[in-house]
Amino acid sequence: MNMIESAKAQVRQLTVAAYEKAAAAGLLPAGITAEPAVEIPKDTANGDYTTTFCLAAAKAMKMNPRQVAQTLIDHMTLTDSYFTSVEIAGPGFMNFRLGGKWFADTVSGIETAGEKYGENDTLAGRKYMVEFVSANPTGPMHMGNARGGVLGDTLANVLRRDGWDTWKEFYVNDAGNQIHKFAVSIDARYRQLIQGEENVPFPEEGYHGDDIKALAQAVYAAHGDSWLQLPEEERLDKLSEYGLSVNIPNMKADLKRYGIEYDQWFFESTLHQSGYVAETVALLGEKGYTYEKDGALWLNTTALLKQKFLAEGNRVKVTVRFRGREMAHTDIGKGLLLKFAEQCGEVATLDKDPKLDGRHMSIFLSPKVAKEAKKS
Image (cartoon, rainbow, N blue to C red; front, side, top):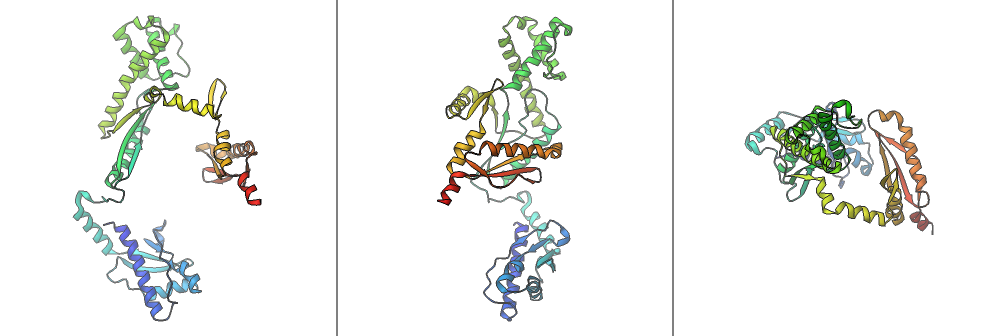
C-alpha cells in the first residue's frame, strides 16, 4: 500500500464527506462537483497535506473561500482517520496534520511487505534505458564518476522495482578527438623513453597524468623500440588500442567493486564502423543543414530551424542555459538569442524579449506563415 497516496485519498474523502454534510444542512450550496486537489506543502509548517478545494469551489458557491473552509472544518470528523488536526491557512487552504495512526500503519505495512516494500507494477511493460557514468576511457575515473555511478544505478534499480523493463548502458567514447589526443599523449611518452624527454616535446593539450606514462612504459617493456619503426598513423592506432584495452577493463573492475554492472557497454566506434554516422552527415549535407568553417563541418541549426519547424508553421522556443559564474554575464546570452532571432527574421517574428527564469533565458519565435494566414 502506498501510504502517501492513501493519505491523499483520505483528505479527499474527508473533504467530500464534510461538504455533503454541510450541504445537507443547508449551509453550503449543493451540487458542487469540484474534485479536491491534494498536495504536500513545501513547508511542513503548513501541515503534512493541503487541499485547495475551498478556493476552487468558492467561485461556484459565490462565497468567501475561508468561510467555505470554516464550514467544512465544522462538519469534518477526524476520528479514526490518519489526521489529528485540520486548520485554515491563507486565502482558504485547508492544512491537515498526520497523527499516530498513519505512522503506525506505515510501519506495519513495511513489516508486512518485508523486502518487497516499495514495489509496485504501475510502470510494468514500459522500457527505460539509463545511461550513466560514461566516463572517457582515456584515464582513471574520478569521484564525480563514482557519484554518478551510484545515482544512475540506484535510479535504474528503483525503476526496475516499479516494473520497468530497465536497460543499463555505459556509452564508451572510444572515437573522435579525445582518442587521438590519448594516442598522441602515449606516443610522446613512449618516444621520450627511447629518445629522451629533452628531445621529444610533450603536446600542450595532451593528457599529463602518470597513467599515460605507465601505459607508455608497458608498451616499451613489451615491444622495446620496435613500434618506433612503424608509420605514425599505424603506431597511434596501436597505442590507442592498447591504452583502451587496459583502461576499459580497469573501469569495469572499479565499477564492479561497488556493485555496478551494465547490460551493455556501447562503443561509439561501432557507430562509425556501421556507416550510420557518415550516412547521416551526408544526408544533412544534401539537405543544406551543414556548412564548413575553421576547417570543420558544422550543423546549421539556423537553417534547420527555418526550414523544418518555422516554415511548417510551428512556434519554437529557444533557450540558453547559464552555468556557474556565467550567471554574471546574462547579457551575452541575451545577445545570442536576439542575434539568433534576427537570423530567423525572414520566416519568424520574436514574440517577446528574452526572459530569464532561474538559470535559463528563453525566447519564442512564431512563424510568419501562421500569422499571415490568420490575417487573411
